[in-house]
Image 1 (cartoon, one colour):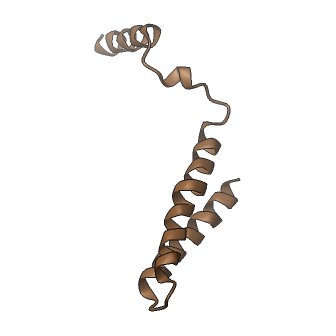
Image 2 (tube, rainbow, N blue to C red):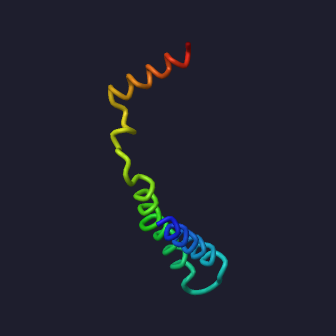
Image 3 (cartoon, one colour):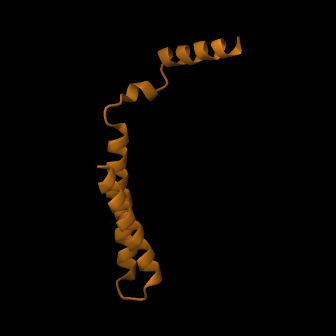
Length: 78
């Protein structure tokens, strides 16, 4: 998965760079496909890959998590 994300990122960035540097009729399409590929393909794949197996509740601010953070701050002061 990591290699697929890397290849797709490089492909999208290359498409954007070629769209800006080449003087052809379809240069705007190259830029558009590159940007769309980054936002609609690469970013969701990257997000899925990084969050797989993790609970979103661990990253939410709940009363329990606030209490844990306060307890950790008290321990660091002493």
